[in-house]
Length: 363
Image 1 (cartoon, rainbow, N blue to C red):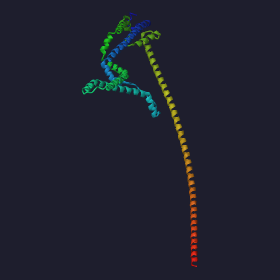
Image 2: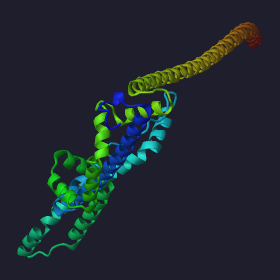
Image 3: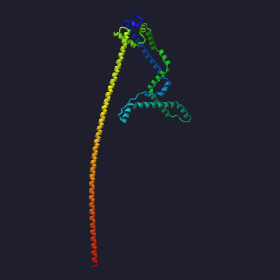
Image 4: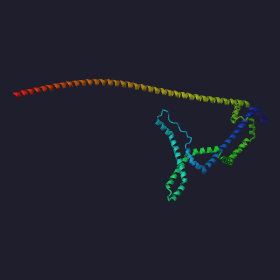
């Protein structure tokens, strides 16, 4: 194997030896790299946390952190279009209202704390001015300022997590503390050990020989796939193994695409089923509505007919009452005429008696 200067000239067994040795060494190198990167991140976070806790940054954080309460939180969508407004508002409050209140409380505490701290900085000056005027500084004012600062501290801790995340991302992006991080990394014994291990693994003569035989365009994943093709007797040389591995990748992509299409088809079928259910529900609602309208029209018609019958009965009763009134009026007229005739008769009788009395007096 050592005399062959091309991987295409190697036998199947020699290829398995080369690829297996390369894969084993490459995995060890990647493992050390991952451990190195993990340790680097830990050191960087410790350095940044130390810088964050410095008085200058803490004061800035006290003023700003409360306004990062729930920053970036995605609120839940509640209710449906069929919910009444009161139900929708109630659901929204139960789902998101508590978080919104928490956010506004944090903001209010932060604003109150900022104002109180600024006023506290000028409190000695105000106290001196009051003393120069013969006034004593108010302990109540100092107590109110301290209470405001306490609320500000609460607001700080409410938004501290989100603000620290934002602060870390900002300083890392700007590279403000790269020198401090590099100095801490270079002096860390574990980092030094990782560097020595990497140097030893990468500079290993056998690994370098294996690496020189394998084309650079192939990734570790490709090498592992090619090794598997040779191991499973699906190829006898490097070229056949590469072609078999590319075909395997192609088949995998086709399979994934088919699975993706099947999922889409299943989703479409589910959507169609849901639409059919919604359509059936809508048709049932329409049928129920039409039935209710027909029932309402029938009831209206029946009520109209009853009202018309009642109106006709009322008109007949009115006519009968009018006839009775007319007959009563005629009877009253006849009675009045009879009374008039009787009165006339009485008047004539009285006149006759008067004449008879006069004649009697003349005799």
